[in-house]
Image (cartoon, rainbow, N blue to C red; front, side):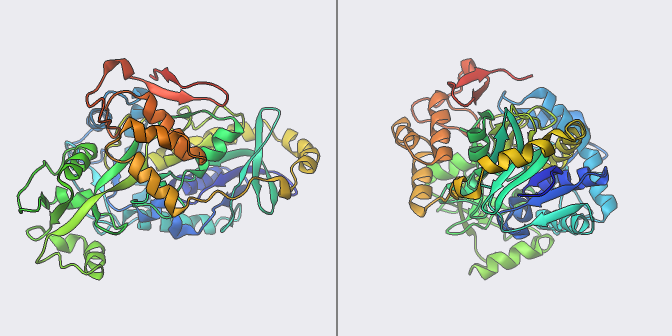
Length: 475
């Protein structure tokens, strides 16, 4: 067990976790960052397209908000959208001032009415941003980092989170920020690193935090067939086209991702034609395609959808607070309602920057008020929470991932969802339970027995431990 509590414990080392750690440390807090893998294992590291933000001369935060809410299918939490789009430009400009080498031209991606996506080398944005933030974190004496450390659960007593449980014992913290990414690797076909199986959702719910919107998994439509290589939406924004087996266009390339994904599934697969576009803008991605055995200059590339982004997660307010005192969540593992039923392209890294910062600021305020109590409680609780009593490491087997893909994929059958709801895996079961409750099709959630949107479901399904699913309206 840590001898004295950290001011802020940050679990996760992607963009949200790094932003939270840097924000807290810059204000003088002692910070420990934990990650179960290494820096390249985060989804942020692999994020390609860029960061949306209204920084163009022809753009405004209000226009960005309109596009975000339109993509979210009448389900976005308006207050969260305002925070994201109004604070977003400042967060992007901060990265510029830090030295992130953004491309000179903004990209256009699906669902956006303006070119507003800042990218690095066309498709290396996540790597560039997280690398720079990681270097800055490593240079700060007040930030400690432990890699290859599983968080098995949260340390809870008297209705408060006091830190985390690890195989090496409890770690005490005045406040804890979960920034562990999403659950997309729980689907066998995914763009995410293998470890992204919804651990934050599992441990947060087990500790007493509410979860919401878990029926909404966004599938990215253009992932290289047979691989995890995402072919960024910016390619289509620069003129790449989607073709069927006959070489004919069959869908509007820049339609929202849910529409494009279903169109591809309906015809059994598609090809992304890059031959007529300026491929020089995406050097790294072109090299990856060639490494996979395809020549983008001479042949269309086979693509199909893959699970990409978890829209639901642990319920938080606009400052990352959860139902559990002392516990915060930010980034992909949090459910603020900002994405509604379908995330607008490139709002994910922006979400990490905006809400990671807000969560850290709120955690700092709570930590200051908790200076002594956690330290006093730690020795007593350590006797109750010895390492051998910690939960086991959660593992997603290939068989489970294939089951989740088959039973909770792009197009869903309620009979198959009912089978998945009986899964012993807590996150797989929760996904199915939420999907069964939403008896309609909206955004990324599509049911064959209810293929249209039902106004009666214009709300967020929320589940609190020990309770039933309820439909809530967030403003």
